Length: 191
Image (cartoon, rainbow, N blue to C red):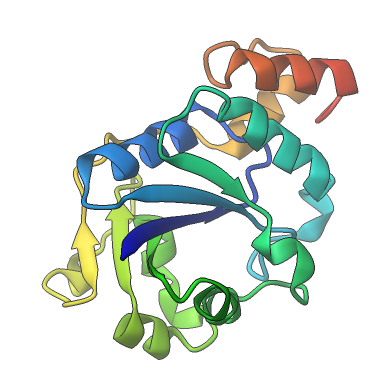
């Protein structure tokens, strides 16, 4: 049975940090593959800063052109919005009974998991692979049977950083893959 890591995100835009995390999870853990699940609308984030989900998906696909064991997923595009992780997992389990799903999340998300819909069910029924984010303690979760803290390299920049840099006219080369940079420039995104 294949084990798939689900890396949920707005990917607004996808950046090198996301790719390093996904690559680490796909190649340095026991996961068979990683799916980047493009979320139309995260209930804990403001919707007005999000660009069109199809543009975000296109950037993810451009970023993954050379990737091994990593692919995009549009599963949440057809589900009610905002998307709740537990509902997406229920849907994926029905659609892919031959796969085992593992959640991939940053320590920032783990720190706020008690705000998530049915978080107790997530912790009971799923494994969660956690990557470090600066400034977020996960000490209370150490030793929890569902939680695996990984040695993923620490990423100190975010999509917010990228959006603000583009808006300010600064270079984001190497922060995002070349194809993503061209897409942002050609569509005039984040200006």
